[in-house]
Length: 129
Image 1 (cartoon, rainbow, N blue to C red):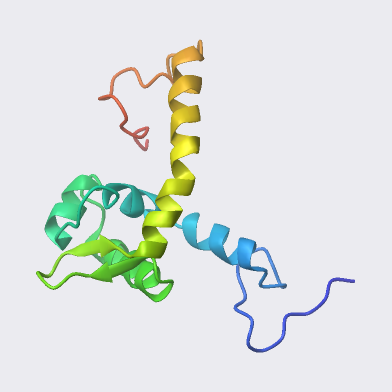
Image 2: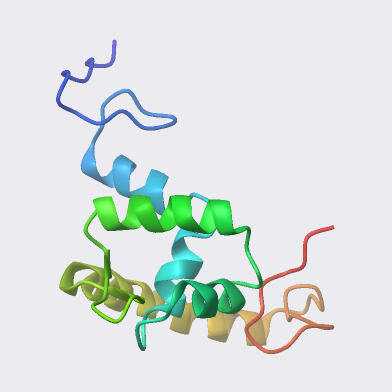
């Protein structure tokens, strides 16, 4: 039987253990979390610029994710009012870059037009139906 998480361990979807990797994957797996981090990788952005960069994501969802990412220590509110990555957030983005490079190679070698992004700009995520 799986060990129950103690009261100080954050519970996450799909895990009662609260293991750090499960907590991280839960946070990053939430809608717009990775996209927000990705869009902030080069420079801080205001809420409006970030929303535009995230294909006009719902302001409510975007703010919820920003709050979660701030609480996790990945994003901070800049003095000018925009959002930027913390040193920990930059470390996380550096960890994602090898995955990005792999995805670029994989997409280019895939015979599937759907996976090659036909009908969208380079690097754009698939459109929802």
